[in-house]
Image 1 (cartoon, rainbow, N blue to C red):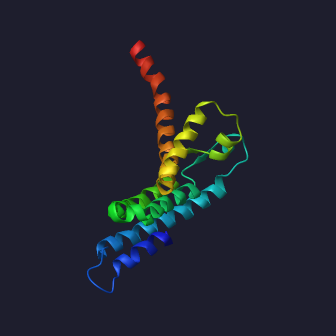
Image 2 (image 1 turned 30 degrees about the horizontal axis):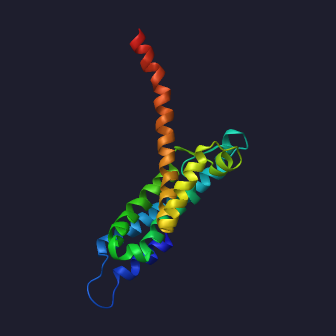
Image 3 (image 1 turned 60 degrees about the vertical axis):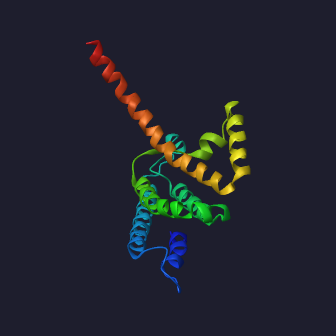
Length: 182
């Protein structure tokens, strides 16, 4: 969050000319930063209280882990500072950073399940489809490392949403099928 504010502050206070970041945008940035930091503190406190050592705890987290949220936010900052992006898409990335910080904060305090990436994907055997994904990842990384970081970080953020939608859809599907059978 400090990096986010450090990127926006020079744009909000310029010695010459009009500032790129307006005062309302700067105030929104401060609000988003406060929400993000507060939610990160709540997430860490909840993790310390609810952490168990059973098998299920080694497969998933309840809520977006703080490191996952941090990587997602830093990925946008790295993309914003990329020389190829600065000229063309810097404004769009800067506009995305504020709602991203706010939403990532809320996802940290949510009860959505997120997989424990290391335990689920690194410590087990891999099917051949992982090779295809590895080639795609290397291709994106070859083209633009900052873009790769954004794609990987937000793939993880959205994976929790998709995992929970799939789980909830599976939970409600048998009840609907039973109603139609009756």
